[in-house]
Image 1 (cartoon, rainbow, N blue to C red):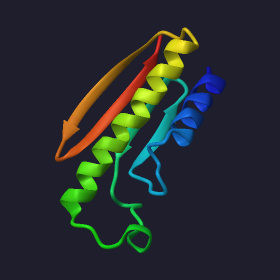
Image 2: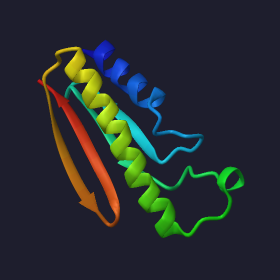
Image 3: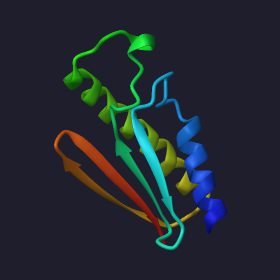
Length: 101
Protein backbone atom coordinates (compact mmCIF):
# COMPACT_ATOMS: atom_id res chain seq x y z
CA UNK A 1 0.00 0.00 0.00
CA UNK A 2 2.80 2.41 0.86
CA UNK A 3 4.34 1.88 -2.59
CA UNK A 4 1.05 2.76 -4.31
CA UNK A 5 0.69 5.91 -2.20
CA UNK A 6 4.27 6.91 -3.06
CA UNK A 7 3.52 6.35 -6.76
CA UNK A 8 0.44 8.56 -6.37
CA UNK A 9 2.63 11.33 -4.92
CA UNK A 10 5.00 10.90 -7.87
CA UNK A 11 2.12 11.23 -10.34
CA UNK A 12 1.14 14.51 -8.70
CA UNK A 13 4.75 15.69 -8.59
CA UNK A 14 5.18 14.97 -12.31
CA UNK A 15 1.81 16.41 -13.34
CA UNK A 16 1.81 19.65 -15.34
CA UNK A 17 0.18 21.34 -12.34
CA UNK A 18 3.52 22.38 -10.87
CA UNK A 19 4.52 24.70 -13.75
CA UNK A 20 7.63 25.95 -11.94
CA UNK A 21 5.64 26.87 -8.84
CA UNK A 22 4.34 24.99 -5.83
CA UNK A 23 0.68 25.69 -5.15
CA UNK A 24 -0.16 22.79 -2.86
CA UNK A 25 1.17 20.30 -0.36
CA UNK A 26 0.79 16.52 -0.48
CA UNK A 27 0.54 14.38 2.63
CA UNK A 28 0.48 10.56 2.68
CA UNK A 29 -1.19 8.59 5.45
CA UNK A 30 -0.32 4.88 5.10
CA UNK A 31 -2.58 3.50 7.90
CA UNK A 32 -5.52 5.44 6.44
CA UNK A 33 -4.57 4.46 2.85
CA UNK A 34 -4.94 8.08 1.80
CA UNK A 35 -3.23 10.98 0.11
CA UNK A 36 -4.25 14.53 0.98
CA UNK A 37 -3.62 17.50 -1.30
CA UNK A 38 -4.06 20.95 0.25
CA UNK A 39 -3.73 24.21 -1.67
CA UNK A 40 -1.16 26.55 -0.23
CA UNK A 41 0.34 29.86 -1.24
CA UNK A 42 3.05 29.67 1.42
CA UNK A 43 5.65 28.23 -0.96
CA UNK A 44 4.86 30.54 -3.89
CA UNK A 45 8.09 32.10 -5.17
CA UNK A 46 7.59 35.77 -5.97
CA UNK A 47 11.08 35.93 -7.45
CA UNK A 48 10.03 33.44 -10.10
CA UNK A 49 6.62 34.83 -11.04
CA UNK A 50 6.70 38.36 -9.70
CA UNK A 51 4.60 39.87 -6.96
CA UNK A 52 0.99 38.70 -7.29
CA UNK A 53 -2.05 39.65 -5.22
CA UNK A 54 -2.97 36.87 -2.80
CA UNK A 55 -6.39 36.35 -4.42
CA UNK A 56 -4.66 35.64 -7.78
CA UNK A 57 -2.26 33.18 -6.17
CA UNK A 58 -5.18 31.44 -4.41
CA UNK A 59 -7.25 31.15 -7.59
CA UNK A 60 -4.22 29.80 -9.47
CA UNK A 61 -3.66 27.28 -6.69
CA UNK A 62 -7.22 25.97 -7.18
CA UNK A 63 -6.59 25.49 -10.91
CA UNK A 64 -3.30 23.71 -10.28
CA UNK A 65 -4.82 21.47 -7.60
CA UNK A 66 -7.59 20.52 -10.02
CA UNK A 67 -5.04 19.60 -12.69
CA UNK A 68 -3.04 17.52 -10.22
CA UNK A 69 -6.08 15.61 -8.95
CA UNK A 70 -7.37 14.96 -12.47
CA UNK A 71 -3.94 13.57 -13.50
CA UNK A 72 -4.00 11.36 -10.42
CA UNK A 73 -7.55 10.16 -11.19
CA UNK A 74 -6.53 9.24 -14.74
CA UNK A 75 -3.56 7.27 -13.41
CA UNK A 76 -5.68 5.49 -10.78
CA UNK A 77 -8.26 4.56 -13.42
CA UNK A 78 -5.53 3.32 -15.80
CA UNK A 79 -4.12 1.18 -12.98
CA UNK A 80 -7.63 -0.08 -12.13
CA UNK A 81 -7.22 1.08 -8.53
CA UNK A 82 -10.46 1.75 -6.68
CA UNK A 83 -10.62 5.02 -4.76
CA UNK A 84 -12.89 7.72 -3.44
CA UNK A 85 -12.30 11.46 -3.14
CA UNK A 86 -13.42 13.76 -0.34
CA UNK A 87 -13.19 17.45 -1.22
CA UNK A 88 -13.57 20.36 1.18
CA UNK A 89 -13.51 24.04 0.38
CA UNK A 90 -12.44 26.22 3.28
CA UNK A 91 -11.49 29.92 3.26
CA UNK A 92 -10.53 29.90 -0.41
CA UNK A 93 -8.54 26.67 -0.14
CA UNK A 94 -9.33 23.18 -1.35
CA UNK A 95 -8.46 20.01 0.51
CA UNK A 96 -8.78 16.86 -1.59
CA UNK A 97 -8.34 13.52 0.14
CA UNK A 98 -7.96 10.45 -2.09
CA UNK A 99 -8.73 7.24 -0.19
CA UNK A 100 -7.82 3.85 -1.63
CA UNK A 101 -10.33 1.04 -1.20
